[in-house]
Amino acid sequence: MMRAQGMEAIRAEKVVKSYGTTRALNGVSLEIEPGELFFLLGASGCGKSTLLRCIAGLETPNEGGIFFGNRDVTKMPPHQREAAMVFQSYALWPHLSVMKNISFGLEERKVPKAEIERRVEEALAMVKLEGYGPRGIDAMSGGQQQRVALARALVVRPKCLLLDEPLSNLDAQLRIEMRREIRRIVKEFGLTAVYVTHDQEEALAMADRMAILAGGVIEQVGTPADVYRNPHTSYVAAFIGETNLLEARITALDPVTVEVGNFSLQGRITKVGWQPALEQKVLLSIRPESLRIEEGGIIPAQVVEKVYLGSCIQYWVETPCGKIQVVEMNPHRLYEPEDALRLSVDAMDVVILAH
Ligand code: ADP
Ligand code: MG
Image (tube, rainbow, N blue to C red; front, side, top):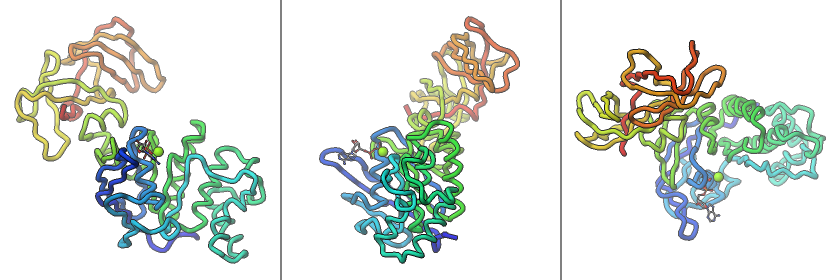
């Protein structure tokens, strides 16, 4: 068993990192629990890789600190951190065997030969590639190569596993298979893992918790269900899953009521400490699946487009508050373009956000 001795927390404290005049990270603070599979999620260029590289020790923050448990590792070189990194590009040596690729780090550390062989076999077993040691990298599929890259990271018995878009080079089917595989490895071996992706679906499917970054700052941290149900900003609402963002105006405060188009809806506020004023302009986030097609519905709508997806149907409909998306699960009847219908939504499903 390769379990590291004790699981470790990772903490970033007010981390600032600039490249010339570009501020890649603008004061990021974060606490990752021991044994957690934690995601850094956000659009390209938001600073995910920079934060991961600061955690790995491949970059040094200009300001702030990185802590592993009680250890201040801010200035510690990568190999002393007991963290191993896995990259999108695998970074394997194509002319060397699987065994050699995995054992390289141990040879550098002058681990005895018999011990190396044993640990490589263990690492191969962890990623379900027993017996593949003698193969050439060229003779392995993309998915197998990613497993080799994982084994190479695990063979040094890290406490923390850092992954930067590890599945981006795999086809869709394999990507979904490897999601479960990586999660299994992290949990089975008690690793604290930080996983970077721009793929919100991957994060929702795999994460214990996630941080959504935008422009070098953290917008929100939470579990997948919390972030999906209770986005604090319109950016987060739109980035995680699909949503309808509608302009509205506050017309009453208790319960919170808005006017949107020419009708009234009640909603709820998710961001602690934020309280809109009467008449204030706000945005509503309404998930497509929380809109119900019902005869007595309050919102009149006309079907513009129907997309049949098997398990559900997606409609684009025109309403007094604009064109919105409705997803109906388990549909009993189909509507066609031009059909008129009515929609309703529960106050619970109307999230009121700052404009
Ligand atoms: P992400 O991984 O979220 O796509 P990065 O952390 O790679 O984002 O980059 C954040 C910002 O910092 C971007 O504007 C990027 O262009 C810039 N950046 C990243 N690495 C470097 C570098 N080595 N030199 C200059 N600019 C960089
Ligand atoms: Mg990146």
